[in-house]
Length: 183
Image (cartoon, rainbow, N blue to C red; front, top):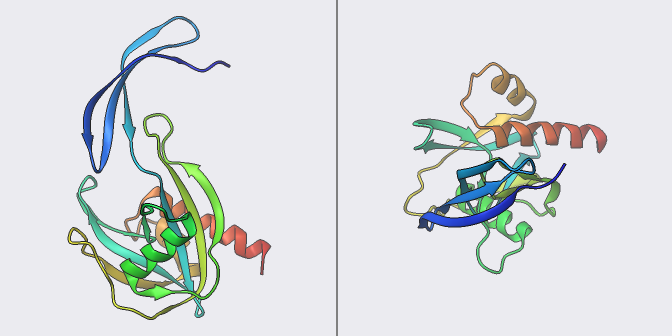
């Protein structure tokens, strides 16, 4: 299998939220696609955060593109000069007020949607988290913190009893696997 050739790239839109570019691509069989749109977004980090009581920390917030309120794991972009670990520790603290004395455990790094997006996500596990601070939200954020029994989250996702997105469901299953292999 061979990669496509990019014959031309032009930006349709640029903003602090991300860029949209239009590529002209030549496939290995010679076919040319004149308008292949690619969304350039920043990489981000997220974390499954578990308390000593085996509660998972979730954030509830409105998601405009989904036109609804979603329950998801804490996530965000790294700030300039931060490591991924520093970024997720800061994001969890700002969004929830929770911290952990344990080092974040990397569960994996994944492309979000390599068909149309350039960004990756690094998923972490934070254990023995506890509330230490008040939230420090950005002016565009309105976040309610929820604690749910970790074991019950899987059935809530599977039966659509909560609205969430794929990266929370995926991180939950990564965590279940990690915990079963590392009791």
